[in-house]
Length: 165
Image (cartoon, rainbow, N blue to C red; front, side, top):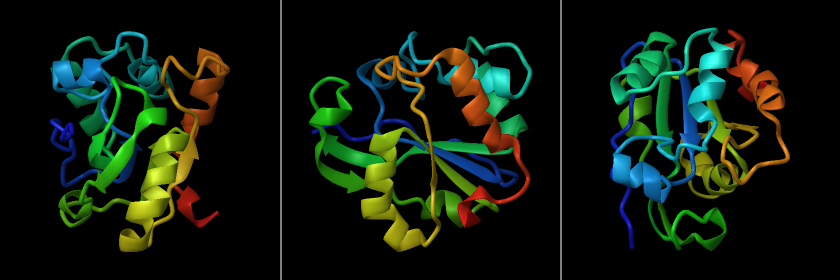
């Protein structure tokens, strides 16, 4: 049963938390978030913030932290076949208090329906903070064009709290 190998990325200035479900095989190999070359997360984030797509882990960290974001995943441990979210079983959620107790998170977003499902089941009862579901940046979400993803993800730049909608 794989254990989440990537520590949360945040600083005391982080205000917006973005949660995925569980790292893909490629992300686990790279030991960093959204490591599959076909995942559109980094390209979408760069487009939303009007900057170049980061290439290195250091550039990715800088993009996240300079925009007061925090990044982690809902699931800390699970049974999973390869990278298939549909195969996830025996879930143990990550403890978000490591982030929530150390910065002023105002908004929580989840990257896709699987993250939303497990957030609502395991994490929402503990945090009491409703998460807004964004369309998945995964290559499996081919129904969403890059342009549509960027438009939907622009909500993360808003200063008001969409969690109160």
